Amino acid sequence: MSPAAPPKGGPPPDGERSFAVEGPYEFDESLRFVPFGLFDPACRRRPGRLWKAARTPDGPVTLRLERTPGGVGARAWGPGADWALERAPALAGLRDDPSGFAPPPGPLAALARRGRGIRLSRSPWVFDGLAEYVLQQRVTFRDAARAHRRLIEAQAAPAPGPPGLLLPLAPSDWLRLADADLRRAGVDSQRARTLRAAARAARRVDSAFDRDVDAARRLLASVPGCGAWTVEITMGFVGGDADAVPTGDLHLPHQVGRALAGEPGADDARMLELLEPYRGQRGRVQRLIEASGIAAPRYGPRMAPQPIAEI
Image 1 (cartoon, rainbow, N blue to C red):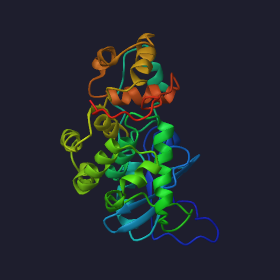
Image 2 (cartoon, helix red, strand yellow):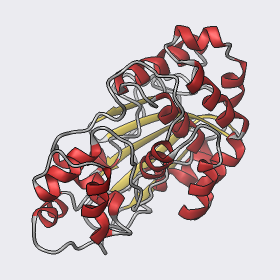
Image 3 (tube, rainbow, N blue to C red):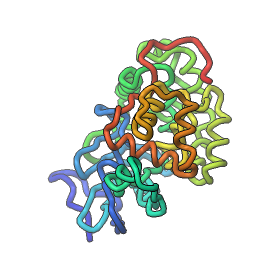
């Protein structure tokens, strides 16, 4: 099995691998939340294919993942190619094993059957993911994604290879940005402080990829300004933690309550009560509910930034 050829006229990749997939596997749904919105300048997703630009300890990289008849093909361009390819299976969700999750008959069992091919993606670029969720603190997803796009486009550092992506901001870029630069992108001073704190701890933050979930959670929680919502949503969507449950979200409790008990008005306490029978897999339950399209969430409140500390 070999990946498809690169676009005509494009440079040849600096490395490629192929990975077999056992059991059901839904490529597109598993990688649905890897891009930061539809217009992420550092990531592009199309049916059966994902391009991601990133930085590695060996240098920048553009990684392409593609669904193939027998699994997933990966190609990479740039000095970080080998580093990224080693970690590509985790990003594709191939290190996640959902086979042991078997809820009793009921609404959740039906969702599990429909979503049996969904795997939890685990990204080696933990700092990048954390920065994206810090941008979402107390604002709409649309506003956070717009700020993210403006900041990357202002930097305009091209990624290697096709298809013309830009690299995400490096920790040094976040530290170099002035308050005025961040304000122009729509980032208030409180989120700016948290982003700088994360950037100063970026090496430790990225090391969470190689730690167990408890150690990774403690590490993220040690970053000033990263409270329960930021830590848990990063653990779930970046760290691939099958038990991560963000509290303090305006939409998730309603979504879980509606899916599991027909209660769209649920709060955090009720959400945790409904998820308790699935402890160890609560994040997977949340992911199945999201994939179902039931009251699809938009993380973060619909308000302008407020000068309050995250709970």
